[in-house]
Length: 330
Image (tube, rainbow, N blue to C red; front, side, top):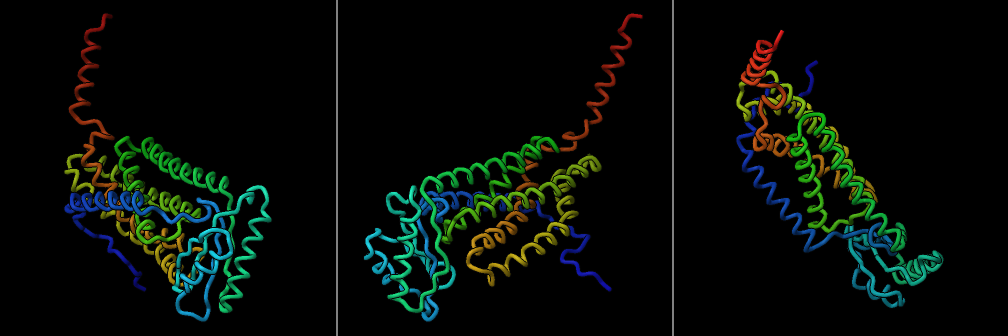
């Protein structure tokens, strides 16, 4: 029985031929992502901004009546609600600020949620309440700061690991690759307006781990080939290393992406953001391990001398030792 191969074992693709174009496009996308986050901002969930969020689905209408909902909820005297569609057109999230004193007395928040849901059911018989989440302002700030700290610590930790495992140039390449993947994922959520909550932080941490795994595999093969082919041009050596690990890289990416894509299409709305972030991150992580992590080593002047001393250097140190021995007194 013939085995299925997504990528042949003997590929000879000149990836490094387009390294300058790929780096330029990636840099522009990173700048655009940062610009989107700075100008448009992220649609933070209740986890990060605090308040109360009610998720509702209108089972008998094609699109949720957002304008009517805003008037209905606003008439209750709890302030102006933030209402957004998510998932299908008939699904909405209603976000409210918590009333004064809700931090100390959770019953106040529960009473507000009950009043809003009862009003929705009375005015819209086809509405289905999918969930109610409440987070105090103090807890949300703590969750946000700890989430950011976890991302920074993960990126710093894996960079230090690669630095000690290989050389400092490889650590720089790894941190650049991770920054590329995380920045583009932030840009995706700023562009689409998808809700950014703790699930997305978990997805970003998983993306960092996956991207690191791919990068280490490629870097390990580059180190082996640097020791084996000491006179080979660096671009050719990187092409050889990437092609040798391409089958494994693509197979891993495909096997993880398929279930994630199915979750994005058919999965519940609660994990939509997590699944979408993961699927996007897997594709971007595979790309960055080829077109970001590897080419940056050329610009950082990595060569065969990085791991193995040159013949001239070895000969020079040997000659110095001989001179010292001859000059020594008996």
